[in-house]
Image (tube, rainbow, N blue to C red; front, top):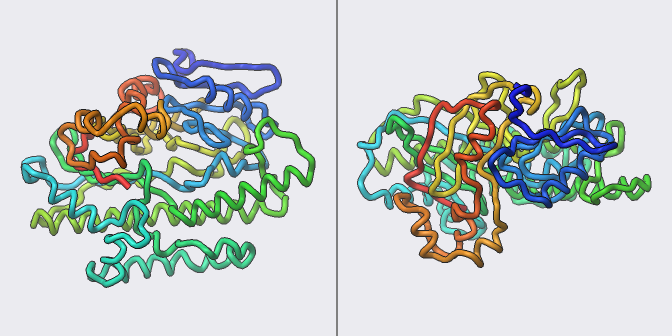
Length: 412
């Protein structure tokens, strides 16, 4: 694959090489500098892979794949631990949907708490049991997670004070979303994007600070303070790995619960007992895993990247109003079997709010039943890279299985 030069090779003395799948897409200079800082870290194994949705992040660049030996950089994993996607194909066709989809959006919004969930209408519905068996299901799933969480908290009591169980089965804010989509054959899909919510944020933030203190204690100088790492054998390394793996499991279960609730809501709204014929995938795109690449066992941190082993299904969503893709991995070793996790921002949330207004948002999301108020202008499609250009830049990483176009979008 690499003979075709699908990636740009960036090499600098004393640094790990950077292989960037960025042909035809913007590649911000600040993100390039951030990647150069990471490439200078001695723990990096072989090279860094950069996905076409790359953009500046905190500590580590979003859209990067960082393999490290005997160490993990907590800020590279980030605070939205286990954030990812789930999608399922239904037996419904476009013709089975009503002309006006406001009712479907309202049903989704009622069934899946979203935004800042504390004190919202969605939460009160759960609390007073208006969803029948759903609260019991969330409680049962939390019990499966609780034992491991308690063991982590016994060693790190500060982590107890999170809204963990109250966030299980909730969407959150920002770019998290729940969508109803149509594929190229007019089949109806449900797709959503979320992660480990408040508890993952607390775990990430806490261990990032512990890593910084470790660097101070050992007087280790870094190109960026946020690249503080935990080494195998150090006081907190195993605790961090345990906590991250738990948060990733919480995130996957969180998506599963919301998907079940969304399916139930759609059945109730349409009055049709459809089946879900194909669960495409429930995949993380902010996480770390133990893998073997280029002759070594290493920790692979995917920050805004999806694993794309040969034959493995993944999801690459576009922005509101843009297409999304169900993909199959091609198992490209140079990318550490990875692909992009979306379109990637070209504009910060603050910039987008200054540059665009409600009328721009309405025009950009024509044909999609969604919010178009000032609160979601920062998610306007113009704030993101062109998803078609992003897909073209990674043709040697994935092949497209289905192309989805959303018709309903619920934003956090």
